[in-house]
Amino acid sequence: MENNVTYIVDTLEHLVNIPSPTGFTHDVIDFVKTTASGFGYSCDLTAKGGLIITVPGEKEEVLGLSAHTDTLGAMVRSINTSGTLNLIPIGGYMMEAIEGFYCKIHTRNGKVYTGTISTTMPSVHTYDEARTLERAPRNMIVTIDEQVENKEDVEALGISSGDFISLDPCFVHTRSGFIKTRHIDDKGSVAVLLAVLRKLSKDKITPKRTLKILISNYEEIGHGASYIPEDITEFLAIDMGALGADLNGDEYKVSICALDSSGPYDYDMTNRLIQMAKDHNIDYAIDIFPHYGSDVSAALRGGHNIRGALIGQGVRASHGIERTHEKGLEGTLNLVMAYITEA
Ligand SMILES: [Zn+2]
View 1: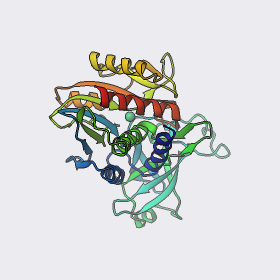
View 2 (view 1 turned 180 degrees about the vertical axis):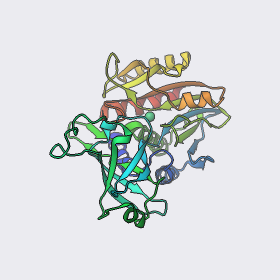
View 3 (view 1 turned 90 degrees about the horizontal axis):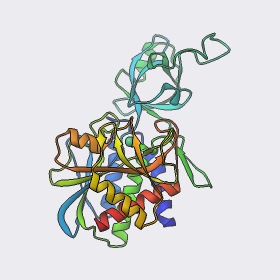
View 4 (view 1 turned 45 degrees about the vertical axis):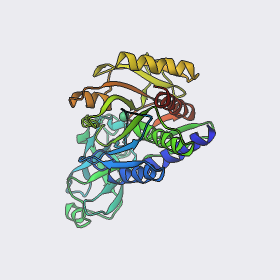
């Protein structure tokens, strides 16, 4: 198992370092496609740029799995006369989560510039209201690491409104087994699913049902898995477990979500997942995520006639600088393996 965890953490590091805010996921999808093809599985792109990986099973019946590879990010809203950039967030997060952090600006002709995100009053030495200024998108700017003094200088770099901004992931793997980085949501689960494919391929394991694994690319804005192949009857989303307040999960457990903002998950699937976690001594928590939706929610809203459930490693400070532990990722891998080989 050690080996699997190392693979997941290394893959997660690789994934978080490929910029992929929602709408800008081509490079990361390419990486996942190349990796899954390397394990011998067929890959198809959906029209909206997601990936479907097929693993033949003992039965023709199809089990769908998903993890999303798009992340939070931003877009250039406009260029200020001073040569800084106004931004508009992509996905739901607090401005405090990006203040003071480094970013990249990706122009539409392929150039990449680095910058820093700050408020419009970024120094206590200069601005009386530096501390009290409301942390709202209208008060946030990007300072580009180029000698620019006005709007024309910025335009001369090829930067314009509508360019994507990606956030520095700040990846750290500690000796104590924690992984601290942005975008564990949901690249942690993408890494877990790649580890599942690696294991199936290496150990020549055939899952019970045929698997169609959707690597979705519009989840953070709500319609990730709005399209899934019609032959999927059961759909299991692998996405982060929310932590904190009165919730039961932690970074060492796999969260099994019973209900989120889209309502209760399928009763029977959720029960089976709980039973399998018990049978395999997988540390788990059953939880309720009031401010959360998943690829299953998107698929149901997209009109699919499916049963759906949601599991994933517990992630601290989600949509900020997130943290999880090797144990949570390993538990998620084990629960997915149990579900695809037994159910
Ligand atoms: Zn997510």
